[in-house]
Image (cartoon, rainbow, N blue to C red; front, side, top):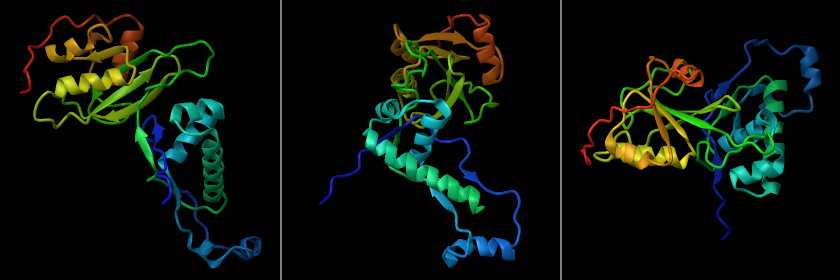
Length: 245
């Protein structure tokens, strides 16, 4: 019996999971001659499936600019595995583009870890991560009025200006949602929390680890801008803790 594959660490799910050609034309003789060496399956135009962990390798190497050693450290896998996944992912991307196939990102062996363990590609720098409770996993989302019951958390890297989203696993908890959510924020190396309100139980968890600022605008992007301009004040109106309710 073979060893189980090690779970790969992924910063967040991709915001867009399906890509495809806008232009579709019937195959003409010239193209048929060009692809004569392909099997008949090529003509069916089946989807190309890129796994979430393969997507993460492409993101870290080609978009963020990490080298393979740093990528392997971030995803907690061997560098040889990174090389193999990168080659497979590039081949799939090339197939989708050249053959005009739809690319679908799904599946894989991965674990969402947010910004945890991430460091900027700039040598010697240490990133500052902000978090906000939001209703949707899109940049233009509005803030959630509840910290512990928010549907998602938006993470914003002040240095790289990168956005990530993490679903709040505590939102449907029968009790202690604020405490569980606060621990999730800490586990993802967040230093600044922007929220319209926060309960005492959550702020007790944040104490000494996360600074909490009161939001004044409706959308996440407006509040991030206000924080960077020094226009947000520390949250001093703490809601009473419900102690599990």
